[in-house]
Amino acid sequence: MKAIKIKKVVIEPLNLDLGEPFRISIGTKYSIENALVTVVLDNGIEGYGEAAPLEPINGENQATALATLNSCVDFIKGKDIAEYRAIAATLRGVFQPQVTARCAIEMALIDAYAKVLGIPLYQFFGGAGNKAETDYTIDIVPPDIAKKNAAKLAKEGYTVLKTKVGKKLTDDIDRLLAIKDGAPECGITIDANQGYSPCDAVHFIEEMTKNGIRPILFEQPVSKYDLAGMRFVKDHTSIPIAADESVFTSADAINVVRTGCADYINIKLMKSGIIEAMDIAAIARSANIRLMIGCMLESKLALGCAVHLVAGMGCFSHVDLDPHSEPEKEPFAGGPGYKAPFYTLSPDLPGIGCTRK
Ligand SMILES: [Mg+2]
Image (tube, rainbow, N blue to C red; front, side, top):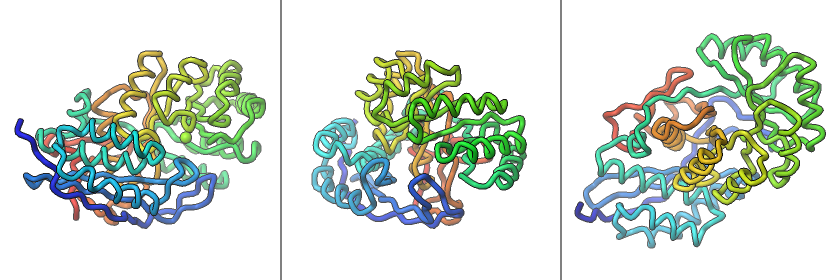
């Protein structure tokens, strides 16, 4: 194939109001403040990529992501799009900690390259399928609201509901019981976001058991650095334990394998970038560790990219990619079709399938 050069790279903020405020352990977010990369090839094809920084998780914010991206423009311009892996490898060497910015560039390059090949991204990632079923997260809300939301979500078709724990044990148990009451047929996953000590996590599991609650998954019970503590939790329960914040890189995934501290690894594009996400998946699969995928606060562009990865690789046992924004507020048209709880990808839309409105 004749070289197709990258003619232009445009960096801009990607701001989006959230339909509902999003409550996480570090506070409440009312809007998405991300960064958008557009690469334009010399044949006119455009590729889009998104950075979704969140300081407490990946140490980046919108300003640092934009600054990193702007400093990469001259390096990327003029390169052959088929060299996307070499470009990504060089940027990883220089900007290793700026992972969301690097992810945005990888996404834009891969989106453009798949469009050159004329195939949707899920086929580029292996073509295992074109569908993915996601769970839905219930915020930290009072039990009566949790129950109402759970019943509504079950009615919409969701089969797995997720909630955050790790703040106050009695509140967490009450909310879990309310979710179970509202949607008895749904599986429940919980995420402590590093909130417990190893002993507290085991105590929490014992209290859940007393109350007849058995989650299908328990994410990141303890500090991301405490793999021995996570192993202690895993050794004291048959509930599968998932490593999320503990795994940003393939080296982190190897450490999870070596210590035997988790049953699942949670991949997020904004922790590892796209290319390293595939390496992490390969390590996990080789070690018989199951895979889940999650996301940050992302528009349908980055979410869509993750859906393509899930569908195309076909190796994810659990998908946590519930959309955050309302479609009419998105700056993109197209992308994955979504009818709760399923994403469906069209074979006729090349790349991620998103176009600018
Ligand atoms: Mg998590």
